[in-house]
Length: 550
Ligand code: G4P
Image (tube, rainbow, N blue to C red; front, top):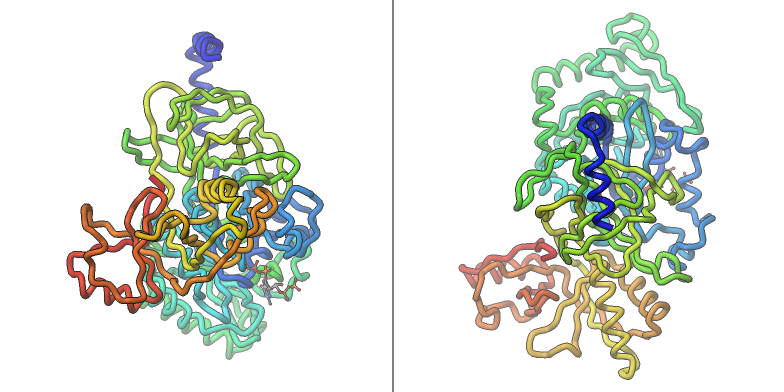
């Protein structure tokens, strides 16, 4: 096929080339690819649904919820998903709004919290941090936030459920700074936070937007708006609320951070929005501000130099692999984030890791709820590729000669560990095959206890549900029943020191030395306290909690 491609290229005239370039430039500029990070129940499903509603991707609120609530129409989700009504696999939703092309990366957040949740963030250009106004910053949000922080992507905060009693907004700002180490800039300010929500003051437009209860978000609603000093509002709100609002705003203007787009773009300052996804209050203003402030796909640094998203050469990396999505076909789907150029169905690209030319013939895209075949896609988009078993996490695909290698996908620290063996020793071969497959997908982390050998594999996962998925998939896809013994470890740390023999370390008795699948030394600890003890007892020891895939 390369000959045909070469001929095709030969025939492209200079004019056509500049047309392609300006088309790519235009398409990249209108793309916004982001993930929503939150703790379960903060309202991610509800907010996603409202965003899709504005984009016209769904007509009636409830459709996304219905999926969550176990009303799957498609039969190719794993049985376990259907049983529990949860999404084990993270997916992507694309829709157009006001000239923008928006890709929302879904981050599984309930019991199905897994490495996929973290990994998805590697494919996002920004994140929306959703916080329940009454609960503040919660555990899962903290973990996901740190991954975003590590990547330096901009984070937009939406404080949800303001229609109910919430924490004091100043207290929330203080909490965000104390717990997450990021300063915030309130874009709007709530009026009435004790279950008496009246609306918000929009700081940019200097206007009040009144809450009228909404229609429980079944459709788009408008709110009454007007200047804060309009006596109508003093009347409408009553002097108690109006005076308090004026005081709060004065305080924010005087003592708060200044609005700084640069700091927002570098992830040092988070714009803060108050609203209510359920009643649809504040969602549209949020979306519009977000689209203005959030970055389009940017330049990516690689060892071989910068990759410009507007380049006419296609490139991308695989950030997620999902096997056996359809049990009747042994298929693997590799999710690729496009980093530059344009994808066209049937195009040939180079698989960096094998050096092979691959034709991308049946790629999938994810529109709101169904998968469709995609003909064209641009930097910022996610496409699903049928994988004949050649792709690994972090693999680079690109068009043209030369070399591009995107940085490996990080391995995030597992938090649950179990010793895993096949119940029937005769099934050892299938067992290893299944474990290898799931480890390649990144669904599990495989460790080998030093000195004990291959018989005693320790499996680490980020979310406890992954053990159920592991048992289920090994049984159903490989015919192997597992014996699973939960272990008390909660933290994995990789040893950075080269040439250091871990057996010579003075470790707490509860810690165990293991090797990961790449033969790197790591230590499993039961708690933070023993990590500190290991570091104190071994001054030269350097431990890291995130390693790279390879
Ligand atoms: P998640 O995906 O983050 O887990 O949250 P989800 O959207 O499922 O929302 C969790 C619960 O919070 C839901 O209630 C939802 O209706 C509610 N919720 C979301 N946004 C708001 C909001 O702005 N205000 C209020 N008051 N509630 C909100 P549920 O009772 O669990 O489900 P349902 O019966 O409402 O479907």
